[in-house]
Length: 135
Image (cartoon, rainbow, N blue to C red; front, side, top):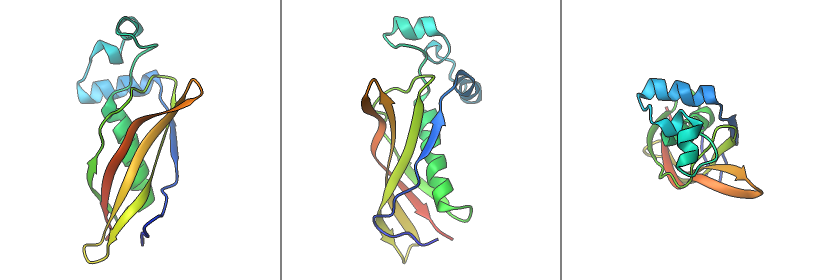
């Protein structure tokens, strides 16, 4: 694959389900009640259970890997968490190529995750970076 500055990743959507969050909690060992129990999430001021930030980042990583292809390596990703994601929401991941280093065989991307909530766009991950090395 050849990347060009300005190329956009195809947007990748995922509906966040209770089963997803439970499976992530079990795999990661993070059994925080905010990720498991509506009552705990509501008591903390959220409308329902909160997906793990790393679950959201994992969705973003899968979007980058799907775009780059099986022969490429995701070698770096930096992504601060800026907003929660709740069960029942659809998260959308995407990004844009911001730099290409032909000598190193890498592309740097500005990557993000957004969610539509109450008529506005929230950015659980934004102003983040991924670096891909192509074979």
